Amino acid sequence: MTLRFLAVATAFLFPLQTVDITTVLNNATAYVERYEPTLGLIIAEEEYDQRVPLTDLAFRAEGVRSGGVAPRGGNGRGGISLRARQEYHEQRTKSDFLMLRLPTTDNQWVGFRVVVEVDGREVRDRLDRVQDVLTRPTESAIAQWRAMAEESARFNLGDVLRSTNVPTFALVVLHREHRDRFEFKHVDDDRIEGRRVWVIEFEEVRGPTLIINPVKGIDVPTHGRLWIDPTDGLIARSELKTGYSEGELESEITVRYQPQTDLGIWVPRDMRESYKSWGQNLFEGHARYSDYQRYGVSVEEDVPVDDQEPPRSGR
Image (cartoon, rainbow, N blue to C red; front, side, top):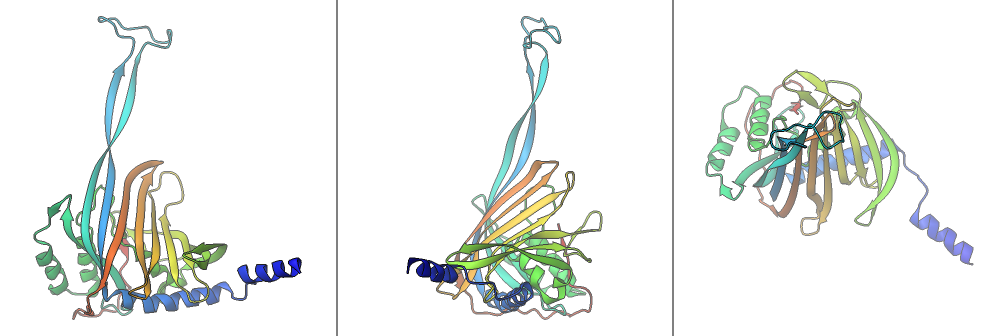
């Protein structure tokens, strides 16, 4: 009786794998196609902490007494050493975050932040700037997207150009027009908020890539992981990375989602991002999202639709 109970319990807790990865990815793509327009009617508050290192080189003279200098290679207490003391420039912004639909041929949705406050100081010209971005005449949707990305990144710290630091960016991997550029692999199972999810690795193996280096004009392949409910395609977590080898600019953006019961959907809970080169931190960021509300207006801008490739993000 006990063995039979254990067998039934095991089958219930760990059901046999009856779906393949293609089915799961199709479910996830369908989920994203439904999810992005729904999120496009919702606005959230974003509190975003950024930190970039400032290196202060401090000289320390050891063994120097009354103008004397200890001999090199002496008792270990002599000589002059160079010490780097790490300090940071930190900034906190508060923004309204929302999704806007681009009038490209694929009607791509993009995340957009309107910065309201920087380190406690109100951004007074924000509404005028946003209105200018959304209503200015443009030659193409791509030009408008770039203007929106630049406005969203207006208060980014550091020298690294970043326009992918919005929580929904990794969902683009699952768009139908992009999926064939990636290879996917089911590598693990996990449980998030009571849901059993697949952990699926992805790697961008064909171009043009989603991200480009705007300075060098070269492709920047992405890789990472998605936590997907295999039954309905729900995305519970995402991890997007660039860079493979030492010396390359390495980036990582991880987003956790949580159920928002009053809206009936899962929404971004927080986003962590980091950039490194040669093992040294160049940037760290942590964004938290709260106070999700429906604003009841579908934002569709009347700008020309072009037949070009969907816009790629500059890192």
